[in-house]
Amino acid sequence: MAVWRLGSEDPRLWGFFNRNLRADSLDRSGPGLLQRLRRPVGATDVDYIGEGEVLDILSGPQSGRIDLTLDHPDQLISEENYAVLPTSYVVRKLGVAPKTVVLTFDDGPDETYTPQVINILKRENVPAAFFVVGENAENNVPLLRQLYDDGYEIGNHTFSHSTLPV
Image (cartoon, rainbow, N blue to C red; front, side, top):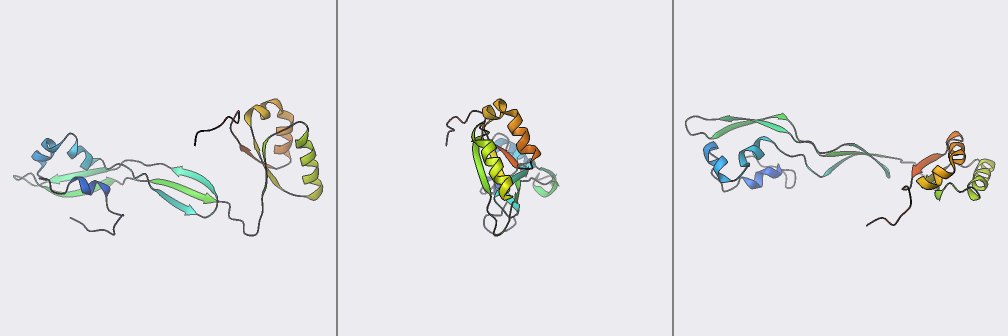
């Protein structure tokens, strides 16, 4: 048994307390108990890298693999070695820009208002981000192209802007 800081232990640990850990009884203790010991599942918690409000998911949980060594004749598990470590989500945080405000425009592009907004932004030399709705983008491809060519950030704001479940 190993002792870890509370919350950082291998979560499989709790399924093995107060059980006979002889290999021959593990398979009788419940379906897949020995298999669970050999295949630790990746955690669903998140390891963050960096700072900021923009999130970039670098990887998701991956199962690991443990090689077991059994003592004979008792068939006790005498050693385990991680051949592949299980992983959790790894998310990079981006976008730290102290003392910076970002103007965002949602739901366009709109053939009437977006050109007016672009002209003001250009005149004042102000960067901005446009969160476009797919239907509007599809109907205003030249405007979307102008936003891109002018160097504005463009984000997806759903395709039809229907009410999304919470």
